[in-house]
Amino acid sequence: MRRLTWVITPILALQSILGGLQLLDAFQVTCYPMIHRTTTYRVFSLGFSLTPALIFLMLINIGYLLTRKTYAAILVSAYVSIVLYFFKGLDVSVAFTSLMLVGVAVLDSRGFQDYFTWLLVLLTVFKGAVLIHWILLPLGIVSPLAWFADLEISLFYVGTKLAPLLVLPLMFMWILKPLLRWGLGKVRNYVKVII
Amino acid sequence: MLKSSSRPKALLLFSIFLSIAAALYPHSPVVNPEGIIVGFDSLHYVKAAEIVDRDVSQAFKVMSGYRPIIFLVIYGFQRLLGSDVSTAVNFLPVILNPLMIAGAFFLAHEAFNDGWIAGWASFFTACGYQVTVGMLCYFLTNMLALSLAFLSLGFLFRFLRRFCKIDLVLSSILGFLLFFTHPWTFYQYLPAVFLTVAISWYRNRDEFPVKTTMFFCVVSLMLVGIFKFLNFRGFSFFPVFSFILSFFEDISGFWTGNTFIFRFLYGGLLSYMILLSLALIGFYLLDRKNISELYLTVFMALTSIFFLIGNYTIKSRLLYNIPVGLFASLGFNSIIRLNINENFKKVLITFVILTFIVYLFRSLANII
Image 1 (cartoon, helix red, strand yellow):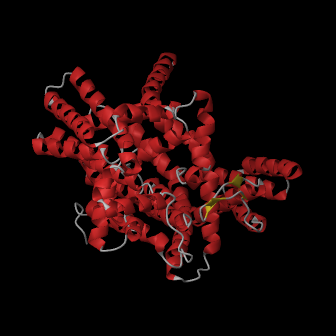
Image 2: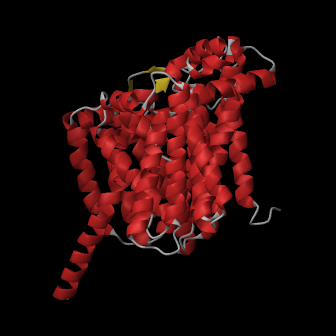
């Protein structure tokens, strides 16, 4: 079983990355990247569909879950998948179900550290490819990795939507922290009393 | 193989190398084939520096006399290179970036007495928005001011640890220079020193040399006042303060301004999610028992008040001036020191290093 988990974990990590990308593409998330000093409007688009690849990975995942006898989770995922298909189409349905099945498989195997390690390995390979592009650029070498660099720009700028929210706890942590501690202390005391 | 005690210094050297590469990258003929001038403010600096080049005493008058130190630095750098003014201004980040990185290392080292926190602080500063936004807008004065602020605080914290008065004198001199470099940065950093000293005095810490520290702070401020009175016309605390006040807006515009600075201002380069997330963790982990940590908390508290009421320009500059690399380093060190799988740790470190270098070079490739 350990060997099976070792094989399935990188597949789960890859499936979650592709599923995430497919969702961003399907929902046509917008962003405002700065390209050569100009802020431009961009709709997140991969230029192709990841659905066939995701279906293939999903089948492997389902095979793994069947060996683990998690029939209920598979049935629920199938139900969600069908409902989403009617409302949002095939791409969203497959991407969302993929992510759901990844969640089920990771929870079932309890291989959180292995999963996150593989997730980071794949992202590191991606970042490495992008870095090679930016390093080769001033040397005048036309890199075949430009597509990855462009994808990385889009992903960075999609994330900027959360930055205004993130900066608030950063700026006001000095007041939030004592409040959080006070609140958590109260909750702990309350729980102790109940138990 | 490097000794474990030398590794943070190797990280510092690597960060300095990156910061020099960052200063040169946008000037590469392939990245910038049309030779577009790097930095929005570059031309203003060139014009003012040309006046200073003809008469060095003009350093105290150009750009309203607010920032003489940077023009003296440009003047010296130009003489050192034996080049024209434009070349000196264009390549000034070659010395300003490493100075800021070294300052961040020194500040983190003196504040936390930990080589790794210092090493990572230098890396996160080198690959953070202080370099990318600084290069995009050409915040030369602000970058020099940050270097001076980091070094000044570093010496202050070192004094508070060792009680060697030379450190306090150096801290005061650097603080004095900071005022004549970028008064806004000075006003952001100095009040927190007074408040921290006052809180420490209130806590009645016997080991804290409150009188000596206050004495030097007051003397350096008096020197600033006297020097300013003797040398500068039309430059005093109140006009600067009223100028800053004119940028305040009502809180109803807070969210619009906040969104604007992260989405559009500086090409969205401030919205560096990983850096901000690590900084958030780092700030959460600060405890206020240590004097340097108390200072950083007070500094952020005071900054946040102005962040709340300032307009988007004020907000963005306050955010730019935060030692975000230091906070991020604290957060990152706390994560990698957790009792987690060694493989995960190694991959995480590689991922973070690559992500930050990609951010740096991608941003620099797009600032021209």
